[in-house]
Length: 282
Image 1 (cartoon, rainbow, N blue to C red):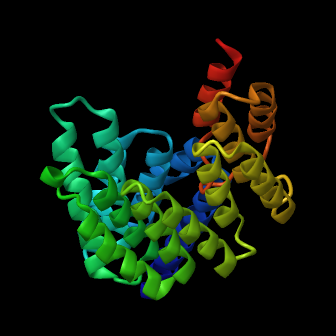
Image 2 (cartoon, rainbow, N blue to C red):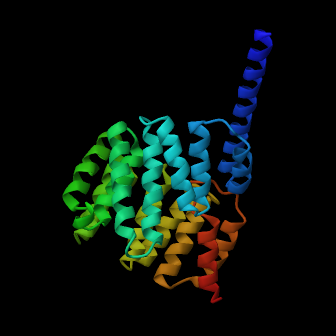
């Protein structure tokens, strides 16, 4: 009898893991609602399932629900940096989308969770990057500051030299040290010549400063590195719209983007649809 019970328990565990694997696959295909449908049938108190559910809700823009389940994941695994990091991202989005009275509270929570994620795992590069962005963008009364950002930039550089130069470029740009910012971006690209994101960073920066021909050349380089990569299409379209030029090309790129197979690392379809409506005048 005991052996039969053990078999049933093991079978239930395997079924749960199969469901979790399938839900993760759907998440990676950006089918967040289908992923959630599977997870809602996963009754066990499981930190990995809660984390995935939170990521699904986050990608769907349901940030309150995301925070609730990330907190459940953290309660089960309080020393796991990833849960704290996603809570930081979630409260960051809540700050961006809430009213002016609630935003400061959510922003402070985002900072606290980013700091906690880095304290739990100083090697969590994504958490370091998000903490750097927070310190760089937030005002002093919410815990931001260039000195704090610079300290994090040094930590980033110790683990990823190219990413460290990118962080220094952002700092230099904030300080209006534009020549230094460009040098740092080019150094990052030289250190990681096959990383298309480094080329996109430079292309967007050149466009921002009105150097359109050089920007277009950099985007062409990015396209050769990663032909038909959705991230290149989106970045180029977004840049054209920001600079109010090549709008028909931007429209074509966004349509192509929306027809592509996307991953959670790509900008959400909803963001592309919003830009497409903007450029189409509807």
